[in-house]
Image 1 (cartoon, rainbow, N blue to C red):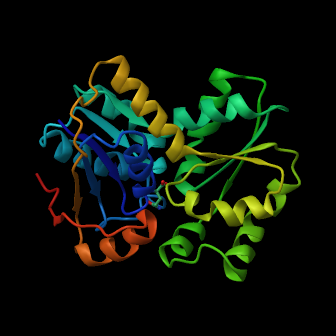
Image 2: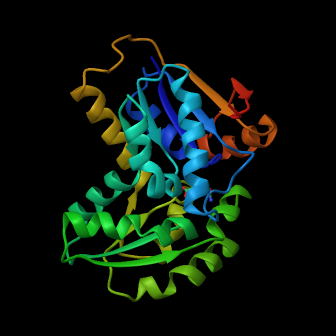
Length: 263
Ligand code: DGN
């Protein structure tokens, strides 16, 4: 049985990439809701509705586990997805938070994400439940997503945008910064250069570790020695997904199918 992964669009490929790296034999089924991206600017109610539709599509494909790659969706719909689905559901928030709490030395953590993720306060709430005396500083960085989708990952434009959003955080005393959005790992080099000395937590890597642990723990791991299959579903035309997705994955994407999520 495959692992189902969904995202509002292309960005979740950073999560798929890390899962494939750690678990090369697993079959992965990815759904990108490209017709309705971005989720980051929508209301919680709408994001929950979209997320349930994505989850239900993948569930019908008999997945053994659901990975919510989208930070925005994880922030507002994880609980309800867990209630509705009879398979394990993992979101990106918890693994990122746990990793950040492990690496911070001074207990001051920064979070960056989309407008919706930051507004939901999902990250600070999770941090406070696990370690109440942590100081959390959040910042929405709305231009990062379009920047990445244009393939502008390094160079002067990327550096200017990074500076615009991260200037205050850089001088705030944080020692750890959570990249709370699917797209941000692609800007890691530029962000790290600007945020010198601050530890970056890549939530895509952290969720991949969590997926592996859960598969082992629940004895769901694929024992076959063959390389896993990757299948991609999109709700808008596959061309853009293929073009930008290949920037994310660094290899050619095949097996892309256009689907409709209407019931
Ligand atoms: N996938 C979204 C996230 O991780 O928050 C980013 C893209 C979007 O919907 N704005």
